[in-house]
Image (tube, rainbow, N blue to C red; front, side, top):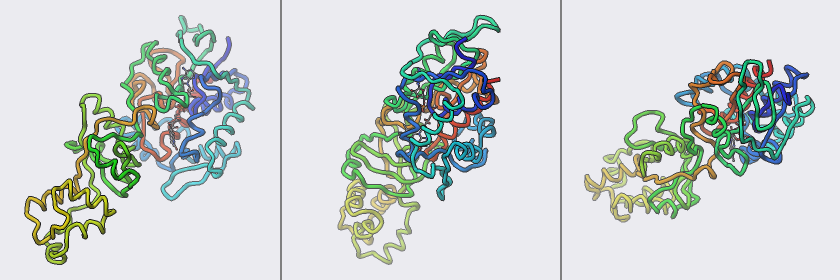
Length: 405
Ligand SMILES: Cc1cc2nc3c(=O)[nH]c(=O)nc-3n(C[C@H](O)[C@H](O)[C@H](O)COP(=O)(O)OP(=O)(O)OC[C@H]3O[C@@H](n4cnc5c(N)ncnc54)[C@H](O)[C@@H]3O)c2cc1C
């Protein structure tokens, strides 16, 4: 047999799995195959190169970050909590820091250094790596004693940690999904997440580079809390981006599968101001002057144009219909989303191997023996903040620890 445990993918999930397997059972052969020339290409550029590795949180907070199916992630989280990950990283020469929002970064601010340290630690423990090898074929064992065949390699147990489809230039081209499907696993159709959104309206392009903080963005007509995000938004030459938009994008992308366009609304003002009060206090002043104190001048002009209100109109001459339109453009500014930045521009994949067919306690597939899944290949994704990398690390750890038995 070529390996006791064969791992497909040397991303953060595969690297942690290799380390944990080799640490628990040093004598057993761990072999990692990756289609790229080096490990962890995505990890090395994560967080703008600074590597937002994890997020200090309880298991409930962690599960909540992953939305509806978040509880699936709890056993993996328990197997490697953020504190345990920090200790583990410190043990291989990567001390970490936590920012005020709870985000964990390497103290060196270098994600590439984290990648290098994980790779070096696994190599020291005897893990073998084969790069530039894209796995194309899986053959399950024909009987309880038979090995898995992975292309021409044989192994007692295997882990698919091949990532999703986002940023394929960094290795994860979706071929892991095809491998899982080839042996009977179902996919929740993958869509890009943590990506920018394109708008039918052209006016955002005119404000490209402008960001507004503390904006609430919601999918129109949906009351679910799931359809709303809050934070900074950024206007771009094609539409909108920024943390709040990125965090909502996977859910918008899924709805775009069924709809040519999706309407979202932006509440950038918080609440509707007391118009009566404004009439009293600033009745003779143009509305534009008041608005330009809340947002940059050019954007104030656009807002009034969209609301159909002449810039020199004063509060005292504002009609009831105009007042309603003004209020709408403050707390429910509509935008029509026609597309996303796509997988090339996305930082995560929403969808993936169906969680129904995987045991959360071990991450072993339910359809085939001795086959494990970890990381982004599974149907789990979270907002920005270090949650996705923590999931890759802890699921890799859980799968690697179990598979090596
Ligand atoms: C630009 C960018 C920045 C990000 N920043 C952050 C951040 O700061 N914090 C955070 O939490 N998350 C961040 N993410 C998301 C995070 O990087 C991913 O969630 C994480 O890398 C997923 O880990 P993984 O091991 O499951 O998959 P990947 O990291 O995608 O690794 C999968 C590996 O499998 C290999 N592979 C794929 N198919 C095959 C095959 N058929 N045969 C052999 N090998 C194969 C690939 O080459 C790759 O090396 C970022 C993502 C991007 C794109």
